[in-house]
Amino acid sequence: MDDIIYKIAVNAIPLLLAITLHEAAHGYAARMFGDRTAEMLGRISLNPIKHIDWVGTVAVPALTLAIGGFFFGWAKPVPVNFNNLRNPKRDMIWVAAAGPAANLVMAIGWAIILKMSDVPAIDAIARAGVAWNVGLMVLNLLPILPLDGGRIVAGLLPGSMSYAYSRMEPYGLFIVLGLAVAGILGTILMPLYSITYRALGALVGL
Image (cartoon, rainbow, N blue to C red):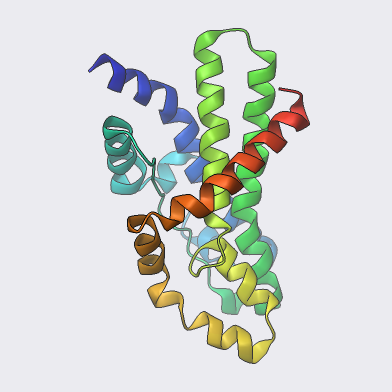
């Protein structure tokens, strides 16, 4: 029981920030490029409460922390109407990239805190911050719709190819879950995670 409480205490803040600021970044980027949907719904906010999904941000991460294994979670997706963007096909790339970019910035920030800290409790939280943000960034950059990487690919492909590629979106989450169940997702993500984690460590001198 004490171990579970410790895991939750160490991971709660980094996870909450990693997931919610990822979503907020999408909203900020969408507003910058002309879509005010998230703003009108009050979702452009750094207040984590506005982005919490009680299942995805609280229950699922707590369960995965308790049973061990692959940590997972999500926030309420920020609504974006791509038709409102000034150049929908081009601008969707920047809107999609904003979430992983936010995770990268947070991962660097946590890595700097880890380098500067000599307090064990802060070290543990900072390590969790780096891990969560690197993991979410790598996962979301997979080129599978509706993940951010899939939207980036759709924006980069020429018109007819982009349209054909976008038709996979209704099946994307099932593809991700299928890869996870088959053990393939971890095989894909772990090398990318390790390379990114080591690169961050080298960047800040850990």
